[in-house]
Image 1 (cartoon, rainbow, N blue to C red):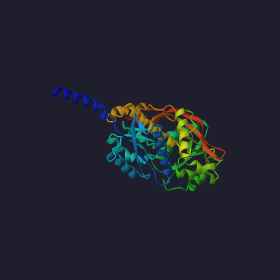
Image 2 (tube, one colour):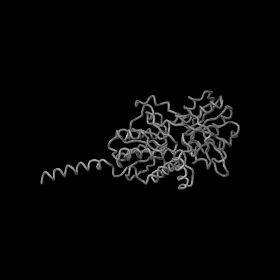
Image 3 (tube, rainbow, N blue to C red):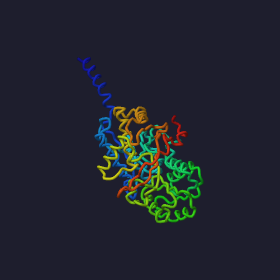
Image 4 (cartoon, one colour):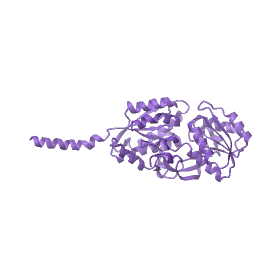
Length: 389
């Protein structure tokens, strides 16, 4: 009798093993900006993440999902505090989001130290692709200098010989304009950095650019600053006289306020609402139906982040305690991306195409139209500094 009970007990324990390893709930922390002028970006990211969860039935690998959204207030110290709270109090399995490079750089150490997996959905801090790359850090976006390098290559092909650059004076701004300068084969005839994020008057910088009479002006201003820059560019009499090239200054969030001032302006992105793959068609259609607006690239990257996490959870059958297995599953990126083919490089940043997009007006609607592929299968230039091979 005792022997039978012992055997039965061992059998029950063996049966309970795999089940106990599986999470009862997948907990995801999502840090972004949900207050202030740039909350429109954070809200767009959250909407896309929520849409992805709806598409998967609010479950990953058959397990219910709980997402805890935290507002960083666009401040590095707040972002770090909220990140630590998610790790220590909420005990999340994954962290995603992050718009700003300075916020994610302030937050990444506690994430890596706790061996929590981070899926960056926007911030393009090059350090995380290079020397500070980590088995626990992944990105569904790009590095800050990739998009401007794509713009520079396009400008090179167009035969533009001189450029005047204007951008915000913070980490991403310097990396962005630095990428343009590094890849542009012509001459940079001027370079201005403005106070970020408080400065919204660019009249002095635009006057200097006009006086320099370059072949083109290049700028990078996300959010409200981008709206102001485009409107002031037109007011300064530059529209139609000096071509304007941008990254992240124009998107579906800013276009309703930029309107005619943005028409004809060209920029580069790794995604477009008009990309013809099935995953993107469904994403754009369902996003527009639910939120009554076209999704932005911020939304597209967040949608991919949710699906990347789900692919890893399914691959390990919910056993998130096996960190090595989760890492390998994330590296495989076995999901349908809205940008088409999706593959990670050795630094956990995507190898991807970059497209040139021009603002066009169709009736009363303003949208970004993909007009060319600037670079195919682009690898960021920092991957060689990453110790992961």
